[in-house]
Length: 357
Image (cartoon, rainbow, N blue to C red; front, side, top):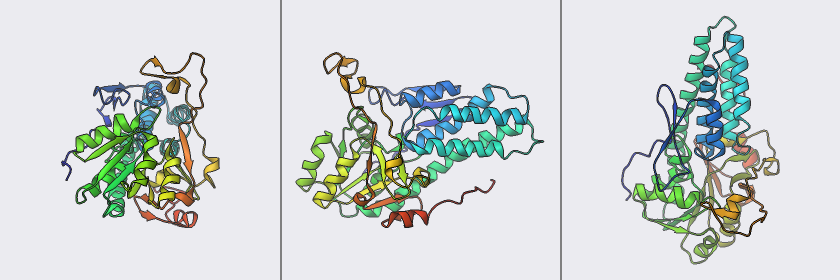
């Protein structure tokens, strides 16, 4: 059984600044970055100081509050305009993780719904409360996902995961890793951790989390996953998602789709674990999910050292899309959703208009 240990805090509000664990330095160094402006947060999201769809959304909500407060609006009308401007700016940081846009829309709604006679102080408190609510909400969603997903791993002797969908990617215990850790309380299995090229989120982050939790794990190169399945070492694959279309097609870190294809070939169930805020009901299929393209040097060099000839150009999409037909189930805070996904995901769709808190 793993150790009982409180997950490290990825995002923390100090009362004055937003404190982010700098994930670009893990596992070598544990260091925090203090965020005071929306520009600093934009850079932190872009550089992957903070990463993981839920965590990006939580951080963005704090960014709207920080940016609006810093610009010192003079009236409630001015505050509404500023909050929307800050949200629009933060929306340009990364294109694929829909939680970013969901959280920013929550902030816009919080500002827009303020009465015309509200004070600037009231407006800032509303944005502060919205950020606090989104962070607490993510903690609760992660805990529920972990509870719902853990029974899917009963009897498994090996579970494979890709990238990092743990506490480092959320404000809570994580999504896919949360499921794994919850199941490990009563189960006895080995976790196979894909290193996750080109930025090694599996090797640097998930292995770090597994080590801290005391879970038995093996680090493997991405290209070894099929062999592990072929040898019967893996009875389930669990990953997170950055955006899920209305039909269940799911975008996750590049390298996830080959896992789903191999899992289908070897008869291994393939699960996605993600909160409902990751579902983009406006997209009919995964073909409409925008895929972030990152810089060549993430592939042509590593740790500042060139690993390819000078002038080499790269194809470097950050995500791929798993077709719904390859997904055994999607684990959400509302429960385990199975095919037909379009119908069953629609059944858990939140109401269009949120009730005021």
